[in-house]
Image (tube, rainbow, N blue to C red):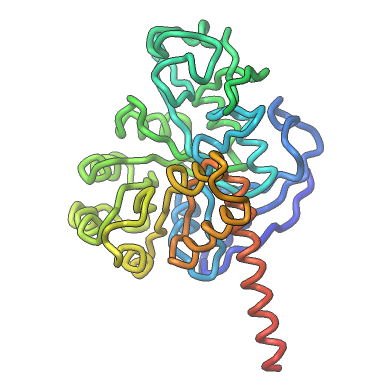
Amino acid sequence: MKTFTYFLLAGLRKLTVLVTVSLLASASVLSDAFAQEPMHTLAFNNPDELKAYLRYQPDRAVLISAHRGGAAAGYPENSIPTFARTLSYTPAFMEVDPRYTKDGQVVLLHDDTLSRMTTGNGKVIDHTLAELRQLYLKDVHGRTTPFGVNTLAEALEWAKGKTVLILDQKGIPALERAKLLVEHHAKAHAMLIVYSVEDAAAVYRYDPDIVMEVMVPSMEALAEFQAAGVPMENIVAFVGHKPPKDPTVIAGLREVGVTPARGTSFELDRAYTHGQISRGELHAGYRALLAGGVAMLESDLATEAGMAVQAAWDAEAYRDSDKQATQE
């Protein structure tokens, strides 16, 4: 396997974490064959490296979280082939949806029913893993793909050295998901979405290495996490899918080293997919969020968000280099 540096993260004193582009000599996993290479990978050796990377850093490009893995035409949500495709365009975290099967296995499916995203019917919890293995996933247009349902275990194994999975709740409580990360030795390449201060504190007490994305719409909410003893280095703060009512929260999070994350699925992404705005307007919308201080975008259109972020980063780097050349 050949690798070269995609870009070097600055601001880490004791840890040097590289975001690399890997040129895969051969695809060890079927899904890699469907990705356009090279793949932009995020690799961490241990939870401390992941924590350090996720701390807010003003001299770093904005991070991308691919909502449900970045589904597209021909590529269904919550699917390893889709993760591979997304990484062929941009380095990204993968927000995924784990659910229990009838026989206690954990699969990646957003809905509690099967009809929208698979060729099956009924509830996920009423089917065994073997039964779900007989189904095919559908893409964002409802077309059947050649891809099957993936287990969480498969996704965690695949993600190692490539990306970080962000596990939403979907019927599996926070502590149960925390135990799954420990069981699969995945604390360096997976983290949890946690919806309450109480759950975040419980996860931290269970294992202080686990990183969480928590809901922080205001500075008051941030103070609650601090009062509960949740360290700031253990969290990324999701401020919402719309502009937060507390206008100080994004700057306040950055001041204490917490990365503020913003969802774009309900507004920008939806407006674009419904034909209400152009691609140029979509990218301008992403750039406006960056200008407002957001440091992570959670997007349905992760490849588009990634391209907009990279263009903004390149433009900023060009301005900095031009300014330095002028001064010299």
